[in-house]
Length: 283
Image (cartoon, rainbow, N blue to C red):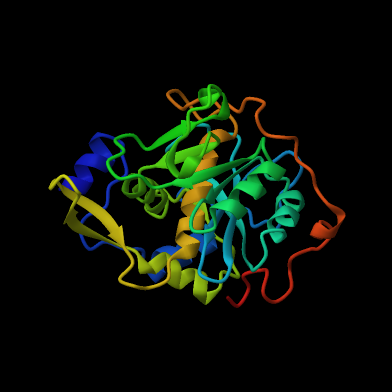
């Protein structure tokens, strides 16, 4: 009943306790079974596409999601996304090649645990990259902290001076996973690997309490890997920064406090990232 109330009456995504993505839902997204017709399958983004990227830090590698956004549907809830690639890379410099290969408009990157590497990557792409945090108690879906907002020297979490986004983790996963419900608004690659599938299924909704003793819903992984799910979530949040997404979204603020991006020849920008260990086929 609560799900019907939130989804139908309030037009807000909401998942019940114990809910998680199923193979049936994931396979429907792979086939593109949208009610108003199937998605077109495309493997690479074009120069005119609105493309986002999400990066989650794992213990020994970086998990990457690249998504392309529908220009025709600008509503922030029903707007379609097409996930065109997943990657697993071991070097931060590999991200530069992916950014250029897909002409990424906005990228959201997990800031922990390797904060220094995340900040260095952002410094190479100051107009595209935001660092992501999951603060407890955030009431809104997101809060964007641009560099211009901290131009007087104020510092935020982890000593960050700006260029980061605070994300309501539960609400963001509600939003992402609601895309797998009718009407389907997400398209996954047909060659989605088993590891990425397992990461999406790892999260389920549980009931707990926050540090103030309030009962809350949250997504837990049951000690199972979930890195690709977080990468997809970061790409979802990055989607709020590209194109016209409707009223109420925060304008982008950057300022001039970060040096222009410098791309070095040794980063491997000409690499196609379709070899074993990079592209997700078989992952």
